[in-house]
Each structure stands twice: as C-alpha cells, then as structure tokens.
Amino acid sequence: MIVLLAVAMGVSLGLVLQPTVPLDLQPYLPIAVVAALDALFGGVRAWLEAIFDDRVFVISFVGNVLVASLIVYVGDKLGVGGQLSTSIVVVLGIRIFSNAAAIRRRVFRA
Amino acid sequence: MTDPGTETGTGSLRRRLVRALLARPGRAQLGVAALCGLLAFALVTQVRTAASSGTFASARTDDLVSILADLSGRADRLRSQVADLQRNAALLSNGTTRDAAALAQARARAQTLGILTGTLAARGPGIVLMIEDPQLKIHSDALLNAIEELRDAGAEAMQVAGTGGVVRVVTSTAVGDQGSRVTVDGVALTAPLRLVAIGDPRTLATALGIPGGVVDTVDAAPGAHAIVTTSPAVSVTALRALAAPRYASPAPAPTP
Image (cartoon, rainbow over all chains, first blue to last red; front, side, top):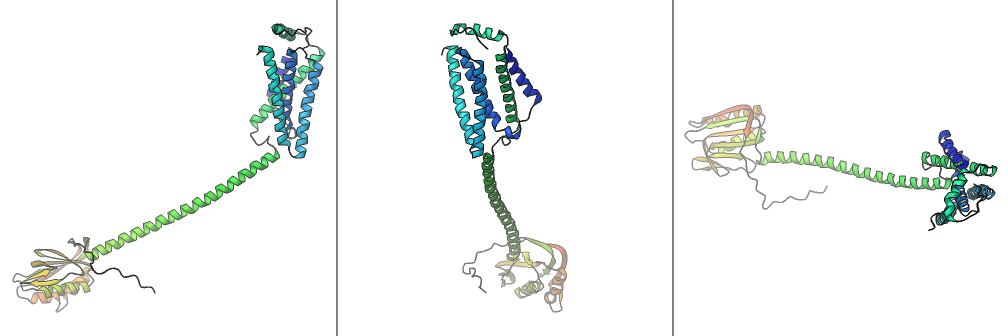
C-alpha cells in the first residue's frame, strides 16, 4: 500500500516540480533508471517466489544504480562512455526480460 | 511487503497480494517505498527530459562530433550541388537569351531579304509613276530608265503593273520588248503602266523629274504622258517565287 502511495507521489512530484536534470547527471540518469527497473523486476520475482527480503531489495537497488552509474562514469573517463552505456542497457535489458519471464511463469504458469 | 506466509502455491497468490496490500507499513517497508518513489520520480523526470530536450541535449560528445561531421559532409555535398546547379542555370539562361537574340536577328534578316528578293509584300512611303501611252510608243528603254533612276534614288521595293499583269522588280528583273509591248520578266504589259516604288518620296520624285529624265522622255513621245504621285504609304504586293541557285553555292568566308 505504502509502496503504491510512494510511486504515485513520485510521479506527481516529477510532473508538478518539472525538475531539470543537471548537465553532469544527464548521462547517468537513464542508466540509473534502467538499473533500478532491473532491481524492481528482481524484487517482484523474489516476492512471487516468496524469498523477498527488504534488505536485499534495498541493497540490490542502490547497488545496481551505483554500479551502473560508476561504469558509465569510468567509460566516460576512458572515452567509451557511449558504448559502455549501450552495453549496460543491453545487459540490464536481458536481465529484465529473464525476470519478466520468471514472473510470467509464476503468475500464469506458462 | 513482508509476507509471513511462506506458501509458494500459486493458488494463494491473490490472497498473498491482498494481505501484502493491507499489511501495516513497517520500518522495512518504508525503505522499499522510498526507493520505489524515487524510481518513479526519476523515471518521470527522465521521460520528460528525453521528450523535451530533443535529440542533441542528451547526446554524448563523441556522438555529437560524429553527427557534426556527418552534417558538415552533407552540407559540403549540397553546397557543391548548389554550385553545379547554379552554373547550369546560368548556362541555360545565357543560352536562351543568346538564342532569342539570334532568332530575332535571323527574323529581321529574313524580312530584309524577303523584301529585297520579292518574297514578301512591302509597304511604306514612296511614289507612283503612271505612264499613259495610248499609241504604244513607249518601249523597254524608257521603263528600264525609270527603274534604274528609281534604284539610283534608293528605291527599296518596286513593282510594275499594266494591263496584262503585275511584276515585282528585283535584282534579276529583265525588261524587253515584244512587238510594240513591253515585257518585264517575260510578262507582256500594255500601257497604261503603273510603277510603284517604296523609298524616300521626295528623292524618288526628284530623280524621275530631272530635266531630260524619265518624265521628260515619256512626255516627248507622241501621245504619252507620265505622272508622278508621291504618297506617304504605297504598297508593293506583287510577289515572286524564289528559285534556289542551281550553280552558285556559298563560298567559304575568306580567312583574314
């Protein structure tokens, strides 16, 4: 319940405040969002498998975001930021797909 | 979302979901909720940024560089294309003006030549010379004299009319006698003769009226009479077919 409330609040905050992303953060935000989505799908899967744990979710969420941002940062310093962010999106996309597949199997038994 | 029930049966999924939604928020749930809210906030922000800032604001430096290189290459190609097309346009417009000028020149030349060779009717100021000769005493020499005088005086187009026909007088016109009648280019003409010439009327009239000239000669013949009338507009309407030369052909222009 409180999670749904928080999501609604986040969406409305984003719509109402209309924040502009600082220029330094612009390359990292989309990657961070994708990493967080991955963590979210992992959490849903864990919950469906009844092995969900708050601590694990929080740590994986924050860790995912940090590691993804760090990789992009390092890539930017090395001059391969574009390629590295593409690779992160690909990897996280594959993980999201496999998690979604697990969730689907769990929910629809198919 | 802590779930006390550890049953994994999918049948109880709905029950678990309801229980999770109704569960009292604990401290652990707060963290999860905060993260999910943060995710939603970031997602909305990023979607808005990506939608509003166009393609380039979020692009990376090396991407921008390659895009810039692409664009400048394309601009170069387009610029050279523009130059080519402009050159073509200039060429074509030059060509058309030159063609138009040449066409106008050729047309004017054709008209001049048509009047000179007798293929075109002509009109302009000039004189009419009437020769009345009921006793048929006038012969070709008098008519030839009149034609020569008019030519000398600058007549540009002439025709001779008599009972028997109308003949355009051109460069190749021959005047002769056939019995007591005058022939012009083989056409026998009987008096009264009517000679029409286009040119400066005053000069032409003077040329015919000099003492001992055409008018005097004609008047001297018994019964004959010549009258010169100047007019601001006379017409030379007799035409002449142009025969292509059988033997003469244009000589190449002499090289200086």
